Length: 284
Image 1 (spheres, rainbow, N blue to C red):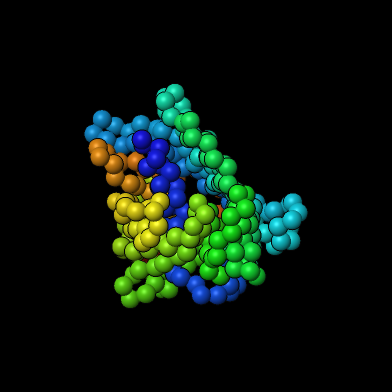
Image 2 (tube, rainbow, N blue to C red; image 1 turned 90 degrees about the horizontal axis):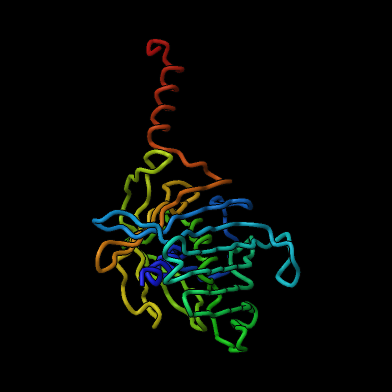
């Protein structure tokens, strides 16, 4: 089903780039802030055209509740995915993912997943006990975890703080994340820059190829590419995964409260020309 691919795209979008950390150091976060919202169109693309299957929305808020860290020190980040139109008739999707993440380390205190896909239903709740090195689920199962483990939502926002200069010589990166009572390792490869034509103009992006290095859930290496903005925000613009015929894509269609506003090449070139004229009277 296309929405199984859609779920994989969301999962991989949340782990698009990383360098394995060995400690819980403070992260210098210039990538996102409270109030940021990203909205994506999920669609199937083939020779017959593009067909909208659903949408996904990512939102960053302050945590105002209790029981998870201190309210002023915790991000509440939510990801929601819903099917639309005719897809609701044969495979209705209503997924919601929540992470409660430390603002200093960007490591999660807790993760909640509510999955509604067709007839499939599952609710998960994970508490990360960093002192004991354990993850405890709502089924009371206790799993040993490395100190740097993420859930796949917190992974996205942590990874957005990583710069290309931090990549190793082979452009390979690794991150540990917890999913379905197990710890998985994701490997991703940086494949250079690419210009994408968007509603905001031509945006220069970093092209990332994620591969799941271990774990039964991700036994296959999906033919997947993710494009993120080439700036400090590293906003995911497009994710694409091939299927038997055509591809399934997630495309950014709305954004607000970015730390680095999207700047197209056209706008940047215009600014360069204007500044040149302002500083060189002969060019006026």
